[in-house]
Length: 276
Image (cartoon, rainbow, N blue to C red; front, side):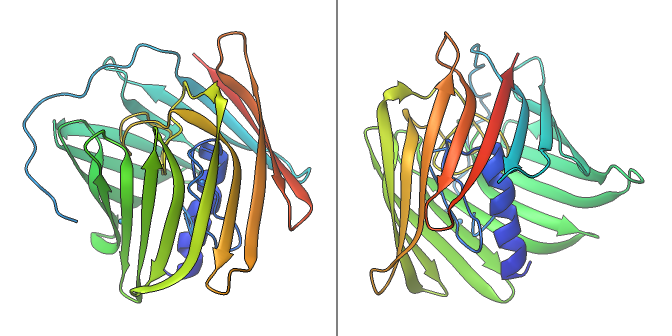
């Protein structure tokens, strides 16, 4: 996977989890307590226990529009245990097969001809959070993600291993939210990031430090609050990315619309959520 592919993964994540920490657009990996570049570790055996079933409302549809463009749409379904079962994008459908308490295989198919173009081979910990994620194409590992979590279950480190480079991000968690992170390529720091949670808006969704799919368990414990602002500074302390988030909720506090202002670009993104 080339760097541009990683950037696209994260741009894709922005429409999945804008309130979570994702935003990677134009080459940035944003983990907004909600999109990495983009859409990272010691792996220890986990006891064979199932993660707890989440009984709150679950997101069923997401639509994202950038600066007035046509909406891109996602939908998802869940199994009897409340785990993500299918995730459908405009051009792909992914099916989730939980083969054991610590193993998950996700098969992604093209909508155009139903052919398999990628398999994600995932290892999970005792809480159902992914610790290793292998991207396989034609049975060849193209990319690897490794994840670490703190004792409270929040994601604290991502490591992306590509044949051409290594990407790492380290997050500082305060009161259930990421407040800052440091990004490295091949061991050299490239930026400092700041995250500003809105403690007037509790997070009732899957939005977490970082997420590849809309799941409240696969990438650690969801963030305590929604994010209201994100800043990225290069090593010369120049602001290279700045975004603000306006969150609209329903009567129960679930987000139904998030408007993202890309301050430096002067553009906007709109993400709408439906729940079941």
